[in-house]
Length: 293
Length: 282
Image (cartoon, rainbow over all chains, first blue to last red):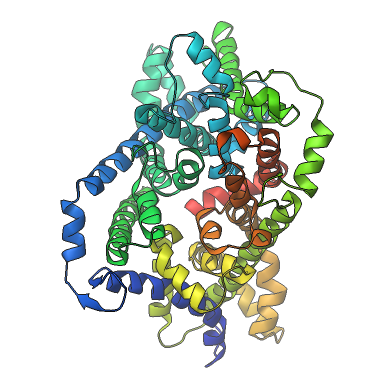
């Protein structure tokens, strides 16, 4: 699509795009290219000389069991966060889509967690579920649960998933509600006339009609779980205990922070880039389809 | 609608209130904790009702900070966060709207390649190129500066795409008309296009402000001086010390102060927020 009538000017358009182009080139392309180049290099222990080693950094990574575990863990976290947050948000959205009094109030009371920053979410949850002083830990102990996410890796993982899913409820709720409201009410009425009970109507009518929204949100939630959880993990567990909550992004951060292997850290960044590009690609394809419907 | 009578409606109300309670509970606990005595919290005896230390805690938090060695008044951290968030939001809108204007309303060599160069940046969040970006910012001597905090986060295409999309829907007749009135590219932009984009700019501003305020990993890496800390980084440093020394009432007060501005923006400008959210995600 193009504009039919435009301005004529030789230099002005370049002046208009120049600021953005400059920022993008300096702070986006230059570092991205650096990361790719770096990932093919190997530095000696003193950082004095570097050699070109082709894919050695990548091969090392894939041979490294810890890296493989981090990949599996990140995907497991992502699906757990997406699934729990999406299903809870969908339940709330279906309820809020009914002709109830006070729906706008409900919406306001449910969307604000979107604005809470991940590190703050982490602080709130570690305080609630801290083994010695957490308010909820008291009740868990009273129930006979040996609750200590600071020592128990599975419990730490559960804590991260809970906190991350909590933050994402509002976002999912908002998009589900919009998706539900876009479905014409006559469809439900037709199904009701055919004698379908509410539960059946949900699974045979609402759910399929909502599938584009669900798919879209699934991708968004996975990307969220990949990147935004960094702040939650860093304030709650620092990737521990052991490595039980270390995701790919956290690993890039902590490996780089220790200053050890630059080549490996760069290779990890490049792998992350590829994962994001694939996920965004999936999302764009889907968006295109939605437009042509 | 259909048979939404009686019991079902009550069930819906109850489920929604349970949802609201779950969502609000962590924040309720934080509010309570910020008004209580640290000793009671530290030995796990926190009451679930407000205590009497409200003014004391918030005064200390805002103007003094924790008693530890890295004490820094939270008010100062909030100011840093505010400056960073404003620079990101305003900067991104400003450079995006003019570059979208250039790309839509002019024909020039390399127009499409330039568009693609900008477009591709959509794909990669700052997290994946964090260390190389750090190195560049360090080489430019921008560590511990507001420019260093905000510039790398401005480098993304969402806003440009949004304005491009919007400009495409502006009828050509408007350009013809203002041309007949003798307006050049500057006048047309200032008098016609900018006023028309006002709602879009506002919606985008709301989203970008929240995004900017909530940045964490990037400020964590590039700020070393305590007086350049943003509130999100500051709060983490407060709980770094051994658990026993953490001043939980102050930490919780900081958490609440950290979420207050963005939550206020979401609730007060709900329409713009929803619009911005839907449009930036397309």
